[in-house]
Length: 480
Image (cartoon, rainbow, N blue to C red):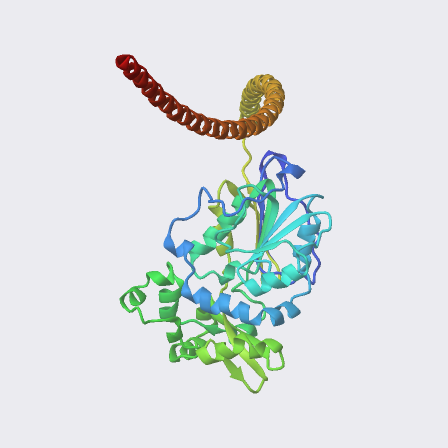
């Protein structure tokens, strides 16, 4: 066993963890950041924030096909069986989580079936994983989880007090993506927090394990694993029909690789590691049926299981330390090897106290200016509210006056309606009387006309009689 320790600056140190001799951890990384303690109001999640240092390369943002097929699809298919085998807590991880202060917010990136979520009852746990079936298993336990990619965590910068990534980085197929995942873990932890990362080691104490794994031949490593994204391979760009199905699970080159000596085998880091899903498992009739049909899995009748190949990049000595050394403002303070595992601890360099005070002072001044502006806005709003209340009172008074006027007008209208009705009745009565009067006039005129006619006739008769008398008188005179 080797042990290397780097002195932390400004007198800070990493909490000591009790390690049991039976600890069988994978290589681990701790990050310790300077200053600042959390408050309960900090416990807020903002979805999908963009990291200020997030890689812009398509190989980081887009998931390579080898990960989609030999990691994502495999874990989706074996999720229930995988979960049933993952219940034991690794002592080193448990000790790390139990050492965190009460009230800490802990982010578990690649939480799997959530066996570490809630391990410390005095802390808040939030988990994420790329596998929807595993997240569903966590959700059924009542755990706070979300589906997310390790290279693009959905948390704002400095959100958590600690973060863990247990057995995740070795499933990322390029160094660029592995670096991005470490950057993300450091980004989401606030200064003063820790990050614990574990991966599989290339230097296995039990070398017989390596014989059970299928090494990827150099040409497949170059095309599908490194140095960049598999999708950047000229072979893939020039042949759109070329797929991962062309990667054989057993190849002549693979057989030749197995026959090489142990020195050459020690340089091998890319493997397919089998997972045996027993025939009696219920999920064999689900996703495994299509996996067998598509060639993603194969049957092993001797072991009575469906065999899936999982992609792994095992870490060599110093690789995890090198990968973490360029992250942010952090520094390595501890490195050790324990039972086939490389572990390092890293601590962020602390800012000078004067800079911290200046920053805090500037922040306080900014807050005071904002408070002053808010007070001014409140005073202006209060004035507006007073004016509005006065306007409302005036409008209310006018409304009551209008209501009273309306009631008066309604009363007058009712009276006018009654008068109009009476006028109509009076008019009808007078019309009836006028008609009767006109009828009487017509009768009177008719009667008087008849009387005048009779009188005229009588006058004529009298005139005629008078003339006759007059003529007789004249005759008599003349005769005499």
